[in-house]
Amino acid sequence: MAVTALYSAHYRSLVRLAVLLVRDVASAEEVVQDAFVAIHGAWRRLRDTDKALAYLRQSVVNRSRSVLRHRAVVEKYAPKGLPDAPSAENGAIGELERSAVIEALRRLPTRQREALVLRYYGDLSEAEIAHAMGISKGAVKSHTSRGMAALRMALEQFS
Image 1 (cartoon, rainbow, N blue to C red):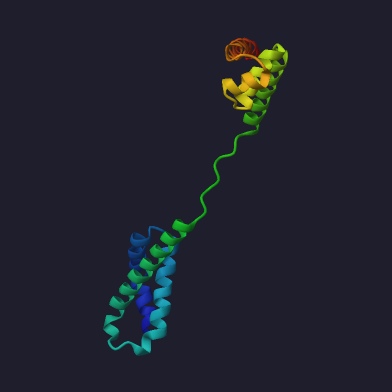
Image 2 (cartoon, helix red, strand yellow; image 1 turned 180 degrees about the vertical axis):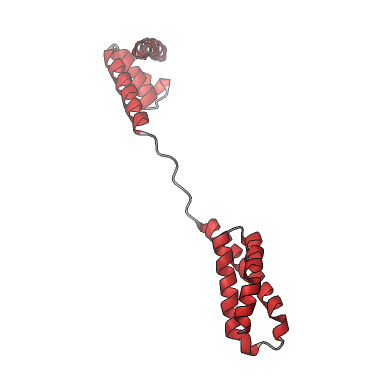
């Protein structure tokens, strides 16, 4: 049959053409196979069988374009990958650091600990801390500064 002869003579060159267009051997082979299936089904309707190779080439080009359009749509709507999760070691180190900070906070004098917790955990202003603790803003600054210095020293000894 004529389609078999076309296949034997031009399959490889058509696959090379498709590979250049779709940049993927498996997709290129599928495109060429689909083009041959289409020409086989339309063989009786072909007016000029001498132009069958031109028909096949055009079919390969059009099908390659379809593959590329499909890829573009898939890439556009593909779900974005999740960010890399921290390793177990990272979590363990983070837990150690948190526990070291909590332990260092526990060792601070009450006023310093209160000032630091209200400032950095409660995110209160100096005026709000002063009101909550019943002390002056200057005393809040003093307790916060001394508490930070003591925390820094305790954490430097930890690491």
